[in-house]
Length: 288
Image 1 (cartoon, rainbow, N blue to C red):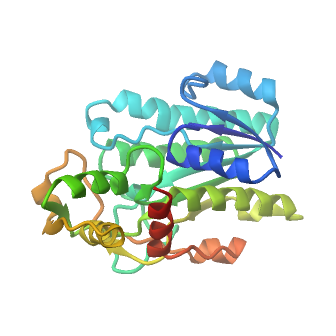
Image 2 (cartoon, helix red, strand yellow; image 1 turned 60 degrees about the vertical axis):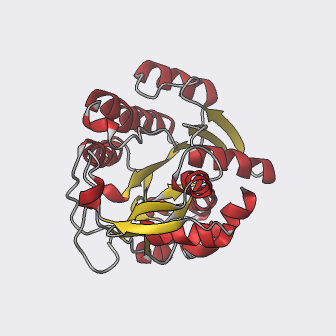
């Protein structure tokens, strides 16, 4: 399978690059923002005509959640227009389209794992644009898989795990939010599952019924403060974690307090059972 990967220098894109070096089943074209601006429709079309891919994995995203509040045009260009352009190009070339979305689209107050069929009530510019991007993709092309994920970290790029490792070694105490509950998700697992999904779809006689939106995160749940404690415990860092609240932290963009995602739909359609977040964290920290 010929696969285009956009946003290839981000966390998931970098993990896909690492995974491709271990597997030789597919032919990948990895594209950074410098290689392809997905908000440029003509550039997207030209690239698809050049490569004629069988699938596109879109890792390109505007992920500066707070900055989006003051840069809505930049967020919209990547998270809505860019997604639409890729879906339209995939439609023209009949290529599978796999796109990543966010737990932010739910902003749910459930006390149970959130299902894909639950209401979406996004708060903030980033969340609204992620949902709008999903809808733009599905409207442009039926053969889409959208993975909603949460709390992504990796050995690559900037993320909570790497920030905690740096700050934990430099400070005796950190105040970390404890009233947001979700599942940390290792970008390596997202990459592995993404390729597995494309493989499974290719094997299906009639895959039309399985396209659509799926949750994927690591299994289990925690809060940010306990996540930080787990990082420190594994690495033997003595920094103390003091709990604080989302309101006290005062970030510009609203954060969902409940982001525990149900995996039932993913299991039923593809037989995929996500790993527990603690196992994935241990693997990531070993790599770091």
